[in-house]
Amino acid sequence: MLTRFTREYEDYIYLVFRVFVGLMFAQHGAQKLFGLLGEKQVELISLFGLAGVIEFFGGILIAIGLFTRIAALFSAFNMLGAWFVSHIKNGWIPIINKGELALLYFVAFLIILVYGSKKFGLDSKFFKLPSWFS
Image (cartoon, rainbow, N blue to C red; front, side, top):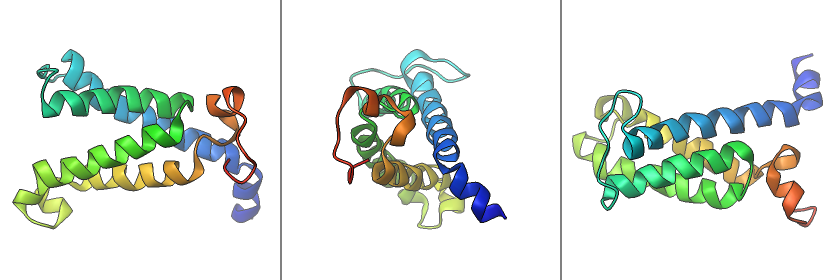
């Protein structure tokens, strides 16, 4: 029964997943770029500034489904970089080094990289992609 439901509504379920991940990721960028949501603003011309730009604009692009795969690729690399720059020095176990969120985002972006924006993104409205690509 659940399988039939998920197959019937998989495009809507994926839309919720993509928008949710994108908007949550954009919040991290808003913290870094604008000092919002209880954090201090970082220097724009810095590693954290670059991460903030990728997080904010990548998250927005993923949420609206525009240049989705490119944004997911940059975001995945951003999370891989966060893992190695900020977390790995405290050990390999994610819960101990506080890197579990970076790894969760990394996997989410890999899924988005594979599926793109599907039919509910702006990619399908602006770009004519081959059927095997969408």
